[in-house]
Image (tube, rainbow, N blue to C red; front, side, top):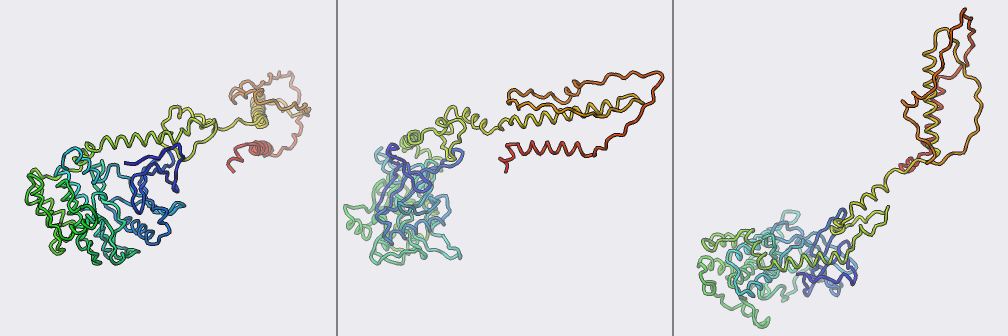
Length: 492
């Protein structure tokens, strides 16, 4: 479980990731629980493995670290922890992996031991089959040309098997994996991996390792799962190495009461020191386990594994979740409650900030700040003037059409220029009535009496008025309105 950082000491970031706590630390790197946030409350937790700063100048360690990212990123399998990203920052090299909520097989075995119980046989076999499936996928890896990579994990151990609350076990940590195309090469006589889980040929420092070395290591893991004790571990590394090379492996039937001989023999064949007598692949080992697991040794389903993990580690998982929630609440105060009217929130908002009461009201304020602003008094005056011109022109045409025949046509006389008053404020400008109301309110001409006897009418010649004069006048007003329109500049 992660040891969360104190948010009061300042928030730590590596590029776009925020460090939440420390999960584990080894001689080469430290694994952190990190968080990635995004738009709309997006939030994802990942595991970040960061090379120790004092190793950043060591070429061999840097290349080994990059090897893990380059090799593991090519493996796509449900039982392998995926690599999401690799990068370099001011604090050193790092790789980002999927965060598995659960714990290692080593921790699961330790918790079962504190309860005075063994791991149930069906649960142990389920974890073993998942691990073997992930290893087989790694062994079958091919390069871009379709050629086998000849990958060997070389560090198969309970510490590198993650068992999730989703009921799936996954193999991880390819940091010391060996492949034909890897950048670094093991020095002669240099051992990499945990001695207590090494195959004899690996412990002897042989260079021609193949996937059967991982079969032997997986056999040790299955043996320890069922026996609930260590197989080769001794007081020191020298004694441990001696036991790996020469110590006889006790059959499981002598340690686990009621275990079938068939299942014990399958595990014993995987632990054969003669490479030629072992299973040739992890897939073959898995098939043998499935065939031998019958009756009371039935293999558990992923749902049963999930229930067992919840039973053993459920309290710790829930405590971890609550601690992370509390950490987020302390380290990330609401970005919504503290907003001033008219401001916009940051594009990176956590789920906690999105669920704060009052966020809907604030959202309404932000919406109102984006609403169209009121038009200026000059624009309103121009619109009213245009409306009056249209209404007046319509009344004049109506009078012409309804005048009695023989009546003299009205000719426009000179219009005295009225003094122009200063523009009123926006609040003082009356709202213009709709065109229908304006038309009904326009003054009508009184009926002209017909003179008897009729007086001859003298027709006056009408002044020639261009047909498009009214259109040009209207266009000029429209252009003036458009030039004063504040949204015109916003669009540009």
